Picture 1 (cartoon, helix red, strand yellow):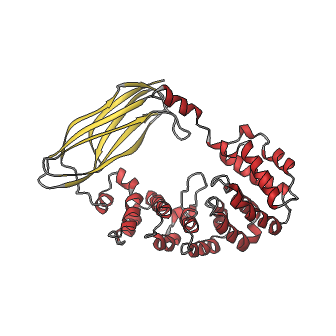
Picture 2: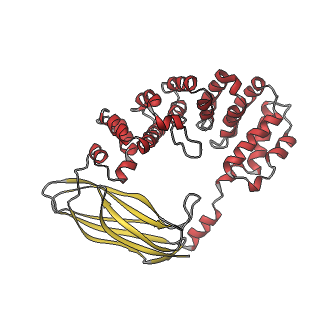
Picture 3: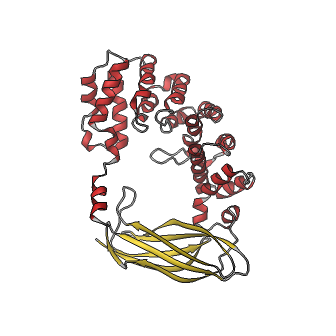
Length: 370
């Protein structure tokens, strides 16, 4: 990693700084603009309490609670103020705090709140907030979300899929939908050919969630879809990514691969052999087809991360290729090995596997020094 890259990495603000003091002052000023009675000083005192120690979701919730303390106590009176405020926020994630307010304080006004989330999601996704209503009254809420799947606005259609995902990141799981995902089937059916990539990504992620618990159900459902439609085919390919990385033959067949790879690995290497945290590795490979007919291959690679008492494997996509008999393919990719909130590294040998259509076809590795 070059010095300039390191400087950029060090300068990148933490996600929690979306809710920094400047942003909160912007909240205060814009709220006062739509409701002159707003106490900006009190709001800022509440919203910035212990701010430095709070993570992004804690800051988001504290902002919503601070609005509760400084807007009219009656929810039905406060809500129109937030609806007027929403288009003035100017930042999609920051605006999520308005939906959080609805989730926290609008449960006794379900119809009013659900309609508000439909509006607010256009400015900052209501995907986290809607889940509280799914827990409180699943039948009522999922019926409303099914109607949202036909909305003319892509943000509302996406909310129908994203908010009902069984395993939505950064939110609590919907245990009933993990056990039985059938209630969301009408939503996914309505959106399987959606023209919006924003919506299609959500549908694919929703289906990928389902496949983690019900792989047979996922493969069966996608097998019944018309994959000649390019939008539907795109969704199916991305929905199957977890099963493809596991080498599931049915999933691989659905995306057009040709079964077990018939190849000779001429070269596979990970360089340099030893790195320190924050440095880059380069993975290169050369493959030659040994088949007598053309074959379509999904090439991935997996890194085995040593942990304290185990090894954690993560599969990365490399490339999809079509090889004619005797055809050759050169592959290369590089990545920086650095810590994330979801992955902390340990020193030691990291085994790297090259995979073709789910099968390991070569191995290499590198040593990480801390």
